[in-house]
Length: 266
Image (cartoon, rainbow, N blue to C red; front, side):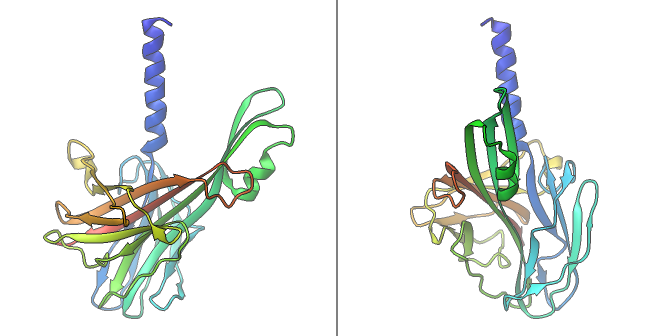
């Protein structure tokens, strides 16, 4: 292999790695803390830069808003544009409302009858139908991702976990975050403490500084994360995990992700 060929290959691999990680999904609420019932608008997108609309809108099919009593809140004025989606909701009662999206799909790869490699992704049933019976080198990966943000009216209320997938349990309530105090969060995987998770935090305003400047931390053995936010503002929190506890037939691996938008006050 010539030096030029090696350089081209290295650049190609680097570009592939960047492309695989470049697009992040997020919610951006107009408010996270309200003194009384009022409308909240939420932007939702998948982008190269967190909180900027520069790639594509987020699908709203799996988005829901849950009231403090566990009831669903209706999404109003939902619209999917060219670069972002947007919807409104009105929290009527005191307490904390969870805006969330849970997706459970699969990533698949195989070789068709002619030996050509193919890739498919999407809902479980749809992907499994697309893989031919005579396919070889079949590899199926379960992909479970959860995204959230939180809005409180008056006094925040407690937030529980479902015991399924990768989740955040707030020791410090997400609507009580201030830059002058340490915040604490617990992470769970299928209801058990998720120790040694790498958690990344990115502040809003990437476009107006020299770099992303992510804050990278790790949970302790009990899944506890301690954070001292460097400044007030919106923060994008992200973490990932993988294991072999799949719920999809013939899947060899399960990949899990958790994303949250947090507002930190002065």
